Image (cartoon, rainbow, N blue to C red):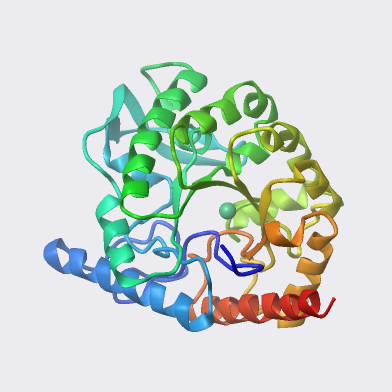
Amino acid sequence: MKKLLPTSTAGSLPKPSWLAQPEVLWSPWKLEGDELADGKKDALSLALYDQLRAGVDIVSDGEQTRQHFVTTFIEHLSGVDFEKRETVRIRNRYDASVPTVVSAVERQKPVFVEDAKFLRQLTKQPIKWALPGPMTMIDTLYDNHYKSREKLAWEFAKILNQEAKELEAAGVDIIQFDEPAFNVFFDEVNEWGIAALERAVEGLKCETAVHICYGYGIKANTDWKKTLGSEWRQYEEAFPKLQTSSIDIISLECHNSRVPMDLLELIRGKKVMVGAIDVATNTIETPEEVAETLRKALQFVDADKLYPSTNCGMTPLSRRVANGKLNALSAGAEIIRRELAAK
Ligand SMILES: [Zn+2]
């Protein structure tokens, strides 16, 4: 990106109410068959339009064609039985009934490649495409086949790499892997989590990103955040190894969070997508509030490597609130661009 401080979102945007009930996770589709296929494309176009209208520089599909950022990808793979469910603890935080891995996992056909081609046709802006990360994927399943978290993550990394290469060929500029699990399983992150992520990006020529956050603004996450104390130092665990990894961009939650900003010094040299929009509140930030978070980040991130973004996906918000937040993000970034130009 030539433009200083290019803005983007972490990925998801609310869906139109005619496609799925807004402000709910795993919201069922309201259409079927061909109508659903067309409806998803229309929603993707609208999500792009909302981003362009707000002046977002690096655009996404708003994750309009997926019910959930992890589940939808896994649904397209073989080896996972969605009828056979077990209750497991997700990210050590809440119990959920999850599908079972019953045989070798494989990607029989592309998952999002047609959607990416469609988005590519609609815009010349740089496109970022989000995929779930290997460690976050294994954490939403019961594994009755590999019986090893590391082995299953490695298999998913190979599958993600196949998908990523086809997304790159479809014209995606940045491929992002969502790894909220990196904020929870510190030993595994360092033992094999980052290695699995690097396997997922192997051979890619486009830019790559990893998004690590404290989750959507749902109750299980906000309750968990209350237990984390006055300073959230979770990023400290993965940063040293990420700094030396082959991942180009690190996407983080910074606004209204208790993450000490000086932790960003540990990834100096990497591009950083700084979350300057809180997705856990309906209050729309003022441009100055966004600018203030970016100013703090600039103490530890070089200006040419700072990418203003959102803390996480905005799928659980209303469209009105999400659009307001996109506008605030653009306006806040513009304040800082002007300040930098005046120096
Ligand atoms: Zn997130």
